[in-house]
Amino acid sequence: MGAAELMRSLDSLTSWHSDWAGLRVAVLGVGVTGFAAVDTLAELGASVTAVAEKVDDERRTILGVLGVPIVDARAAEVPAAIIDAELVIASPGLRPDHAWLVAAAERGIPVWGDIELAWRVRDKVREASWILITGTNGKTTTTQLTAHMLREAGYRVAPVGNIGTPVLDAVRDPEGFDALVVELSSFQLHGLPVDGAGALWPHSAACLNIDDDHLDWHGGADAYRAAKGKVYGNARVAAVYNVEDPATMRLVEEADVVEGCRAIGFSLGVPGPSDVGIVDGVLVDRAFLEQRRDQALELADLGDLEPAGLRSPHMARNVLAAAALARAFGAEPAHVRDAIRSFRLDRHRTELVAEVDGVRFVDDSKATNPHAAEGSLSAFDRVVWIVGGLFKGADVAPLVERHASRLVAAIAIGVDREPVRQAFARHAPGIPLVEVDGQDTDAVMRLAVEAAAAHAVPGVTVLLAPAAASMDQFTDYAERGDRFAEAVRERGARGDHDGSRPGD
Image (cartoon, rainbow, N blue to C red; front, side, top):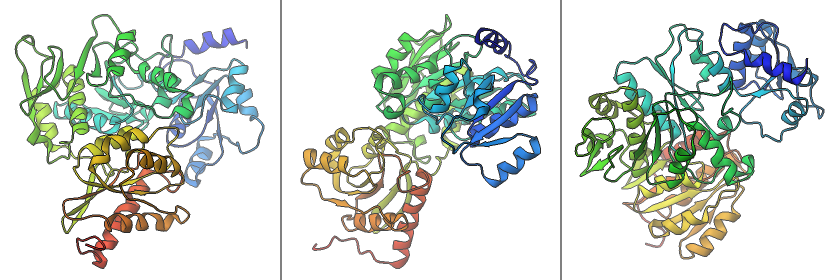
């Protein structure tokens, strides 16, 4: 079958009820999203082969039951299953220059991600509206908030995508949904088509912020921003952007949206007549009311944000973005307010672990890049900062420069400590910097907490906001945060704290 003929046949696959039978598909990777893709395609009747470097025992057993062969991909050569495929479904973590993807491209074999596959088969039960959310930081919290607000309004809704639940699982839910709130990473957005049969047509979309991240994967800042900008493509009702981040406004201006789609801004300041924002401590909506030129609707006040841990500036922005998306879908102001009051953050997101003798220990291990750490650092006045890991090409120096005045000390962890050394030498030479050797993963966080506590006095926050990825020393950011919490609690249980610094 020639490449042109193949493309025509795949363009017809735009429904669960299309003819998928016998289509030869290679699914690259069988992690969470890859396994969902294999399971879906097997149910559709496609001829599926899983290509993976490792498969856990449970999934291996299930794939055997499904009759899906597994190709061990640890060999250097490109597996025949890819060369012989009519379609490749790639894990979002595979770099564009990966040998498997290059081989597929050279042979004219289309490559989809799980998001495109899910969009094409979204009508299995009933077609839900898709609300898309991306950004360098805040995606998960905003996705959860938006879904929570829509549930409060009576909609059946699921937060899915990069948040952890595959979109394909939601598409196959037997009851279906009114809306799917889809968190999208830059990896997932990179491979999405902007037009044609596989292009998404979301109800609404938001890009929360843009800062340099994953530059090594994308090949540069421009490519990273271009991937993020795809979130707005074909948006039908609302394109939500950050007024305080002009890059997101430019993405909206450049986006090819449906005629009539509105640009809705959010900020911590007084909102314009098509925005949401804050006036005298009250979150207000000037976008979704007829008299928006001279009136505003009250959504909540800043006091409502406090119990949920949403009072910090970066969290308040997430609330406003979610409110804009929820209001665009039909939630009333009271639904937004009630959802804010009942919402609780996930773990490892500015989570208070303990307060001992007036020193707060806060876990923001989810701050895996400098932009994310910016938000949590801004929330506290005096900080002993635990920082470091894998910076992935991101520059930590501007963060040190901006927050040097609030730093009491810094504890550097991770194998990539040289950028931290240089940043402090240049921008905060008077701030104590303690380096923790990263050879012993089991001990690193205990040593970091001990070093941090030695510099903390009442009124100081010991903040784990590493501004870097965790895979050099930990399985993921969750394990990093768990180790931090364990170390804090172990120290508290031993009672080896007196609220003073050595030599005081």
